[in-house]
Amino acid sequence: MSDYNLIDEPWISVVVDYKGTTKLVGLKEFFEHAHEYIALAGDMPTQDFAVMRFLLAILHTVFSRYDAHGEPYEMIELNDRMQQIEKVDLEDEEDYEDALMETWRDLWNAKKFPEIVVKYLDAWHDRFYLFDDKYPFYQVTKEEIENIDSKFADNTDAKATIKFRSMNRTISESGNKATLFSPKIEENKDLLSNAELARWLITFQGVSNASDKKTINKIEGKSIGWIYNLGGVFLSSDNIFKTLMLNLILRHDDSQYNNIQNPCWEKKPETIYNEYLKNKTIDNVSELYTNWSRLVYYFPFKPKKSEIKQNMFRIVKTNSIPSENNFLEPMTIWKYYDKKYTPQKYKTNKAAWRSFGSFLNVNEDVRMPGVISHLNDIKKFIDESEVIQINAISAIDNNDASSRTMINEFYDYFDLGLFIVNDLQSDGWIARINDIVDKTKDVVEKIYRAFLNDIAKIRGIESGAFTSSSIESMYFKIDKPFRD
Image (cartoon, rainbow, N blue to C red; front, side, top):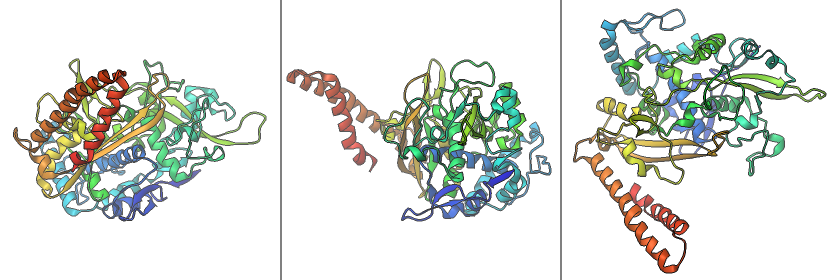
């Protein structure tokens, strides 16, 4: 049984005009008309971030093998499914990296994606069925789930399962506690269209929580979705084509990550199962963007002594991705502690500009996100008048290490002209903006805080809640003027 192919069926939600009109498109239509769409318009920004990374994995894979004219690079060998067979020879690496940058330039100048993207999707058409006995999209088959536990093929067994209401992150309801103020009534919480299911399946692999008990093998700690760890960063412009291009890093800054692109759909479910069993290292962007935090098996659950069937997912934890100094990830801000860099999440009450130095900085001890560093490589191909939006996104959990249930999300952005981003001189725009941000925080956090504490003392009240509330109120008042 093969049903609902994501190449042909509409499931990606996009904004098509400035009235906010949206439509659903399949992968083929999406890449043929990406330059005509304004932005992704899924159920929440975290979902759009996850879907965008999936779309970028397709582009990374295609254009690591083909140039902007649809011609394969002469230094790589491809099979009949447009798949790279071997890594580029050492003596050809420099020429290959130059060719990748030329491809980026030519794509940007063409202002739309070439036909080769759809040709590639057609070559892998059988791997994009949402429901399939052999290659279910982002899922494993009955055989793989039986390898973990023979009982897992029993559709009357409820162990290691989640309902659609748990996968839907606008609800995030577990089997133990009802979600207050749910956007759906009880009778509809487990109802998802195929389009919604496809989007949430991709999202779930990025933001699965820590409460699942069953693991693929003995692992230490709590395995959670990789996106959950990130203080996500991405660039955007006035159409989806430009947005994807600004985040498309064909030549990674660190040459050790310029490897064969290995997205999940190019592997059989049993291959993926064995790779996770052996804790295989991820060394390429397409594999990182399509990593599975869970092995997922879709089945119609039928409780014993009941005639009512309910669609559910059997889920089994895979291994966590190492986060320390994992600079393969280009879409996060970093924090430096104990001589190590790790992804840094955002705080929900802190505007993105207050972390300006984590995005753009001229100091050597600050590591900029990969997409920002890459902007310095491609800026020569982009008109200086181009306005680029820097977006910040984080999935927010309940701060309980045993569950890590998603309860909120952080999303913020600020606009910068490319001429500002390019000005990295010691007395340039970036340095000056950072100085102003630091001075602003210094005045609010020190001088104004001391003033508030004095007021609290005079009034004979506790300073904690009063001071914190007043400081956040001050940041709120200066937020818009500062952005302007």
